[in-house]
Amino acid sequence: MDEHVILVHGLWMRAFTLAALHRRLEREGYKVHFFDYASVLSEHDASIDKLVELVRSIEVTDDPPGRIHFVCHSLGGLMALRALRKLPDLAPGCVVCIGSPLRGSAIARSVAQLPGGSFFIGKNLSVLLEGFERWSGKRPVGAIAGRLPFGLGLVFGALPMPHDGTVSVEETQLPGLTDHIVVPATHTGLLFSDEAAAQTVAFLRNKRFHHAAAA
Image (tube, rainbow, N blue to C red; front, side, top):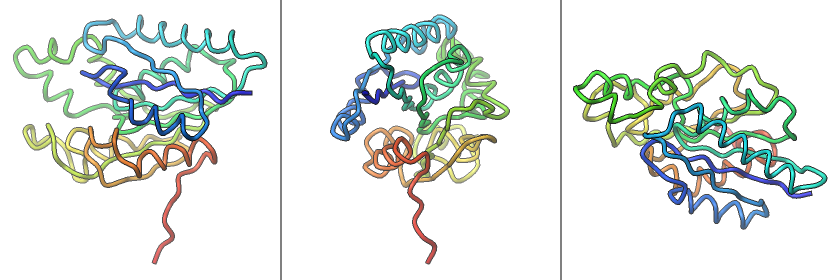
């Protein structure tokens, strides 16, 4: 049986921005699928339905069904967790959220208060503002946060340290997560970080990140 990974990109991005992760996961033996959506212009419900359709198409073509994982950057993590609410009977698998503001985004709130800010963020603003109170699903979810503070956070001053320039570590720490880890990367840099990629593979295989032993 194949092990599938669906890559879900974040705000202001498209699927090709996850190409480095795509290559890494393919080398590790996973069958990788891009999920592309218009993160600013498309209604989030329509995008989530489109993601559910992709999952169902994988199930149809993979008989017997193998594991189906999600690896998501930023807003993509929120989208995937919402989609999983509509997939109660989905084959086993894990979710890795990379730099995802799972508890809601302070930067999104700051931008939305500016003239035209809501239009700039687009139709997924409510998703970014609300976040989640906790993850109560059965699927293991791991979160990777960055701690190099270069990005919008320097402009708006809305983020507590540590943060990745766009999302604070605190915003990625959702009750109910299976595991959580912090790596030295900026928000965009997480997409190209060898450590973030290695930790992603570790979680998909073991449902745990590789935490260095204390000195």
